[in-house]
Amino acid sequence: MIELQTAIEGKKTYFGQMRKLLKPMGYTLCGNWEYDRAFFDGLLWRDGGETIYIRIPFHVLDGELDNDDTFIEFGTPYVIKHVVHIGLDRDADSLLLTAAGGLNQFQEPLDRDGYIKDKSEWEDAGKQAIEYIMDYI
Image (cartoon, rainbow, N blue to C red; front, side):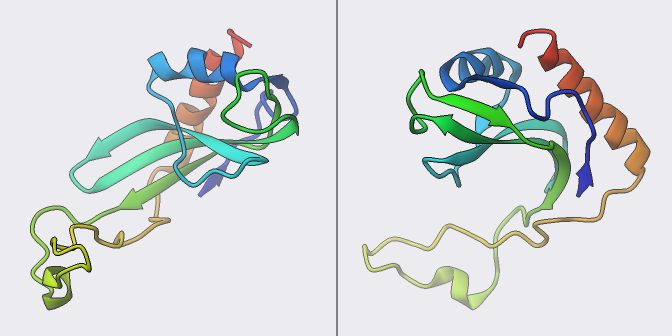
């Protein structure tokens, strides 16, 4: 993980406005959100099972998430790398039937916080991504 010191930290805006702005840029609301805090995730690079993301955390100042008029404040963004298994999982546990009668298709990532080579390169890429967003806040 690479923390980024940028001008977005402490900026305040409306959730709906940011979601509409970031979606066409390829950012998504991280699936692990709460009603008082969450992350916007953007793809910086992907090759096979390795993916480098920029993650922009924010917390709610007024309202609840998933409402456009919720007022939010950004935290310190960071760059992360996930490494996942691609292809068929030959592990016997992967073929266990679920209670619903289907196959278990979900696998644990090989490394949720993978080692990032060339940290300065990805730090620069993350800062450039944030600078681009800052032009619209």
